[in-house]
Image 1 (cartoon, helix red, strand yellow):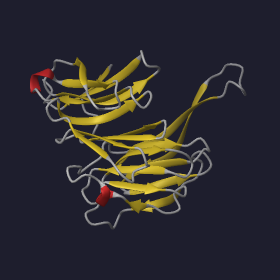
Image 2 (image 1 turned 60 degrees about the vertical axis):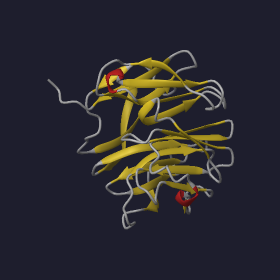
Image 3 (image 1 turned 30 degrees about the vertical axis):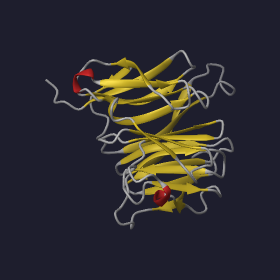
Image 4 (image 1 turned 90 degrees about the vertical axis):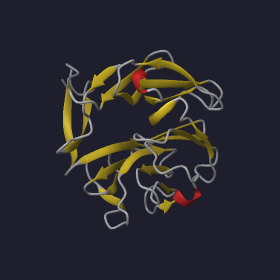
Length: 249
């Protein structure tokens, strides 16, 4: 895993792609291209198979869409005037048309587009009452998984019908908060966040039965730690980044 101390404060958020131009240059060098900058932060983005790029931007509080791989952007969903104004947190795509947005704000917790971002619908009223935020989402084999939140309320959500109905599971006995989710197939997946016992630090939970049961596979053992993001090369090799909220010595 890679540890970080404070990834939550960014005066300027910049989305940039590193492109390997090996097909154009014999050296195969990497080049960075600045695609879009926000006044504060871009919390998540998703790139579909059809090269549609969606950004979850905060300040401005909008979903931005690009149909040319990031060369230009249009506003897809404007939440600047929503009351309360939601903080955009996570995104996931099923295909070019069906994309989900999760936020940290009750009443605006989950949005979905089924027409590639031309319009969005608020699905928050259909969520279980315990769900007040969605920090992480993942989809595989037609199943949508979600979790939250990064401060309090550790729960797991699963939908087989693209967000129309949900299965809910509280995991407060194993975690004090949950932040990210990753599944390799409909049965094998991971949740990560902070353990229920403070002195255990960050926790990584594993399921082999689609979320019916969870087992703790790893603790960081450092108070204040919480696991923040999950990246997998394959089902055996993955990376977990950490955040520690305690004051630095």
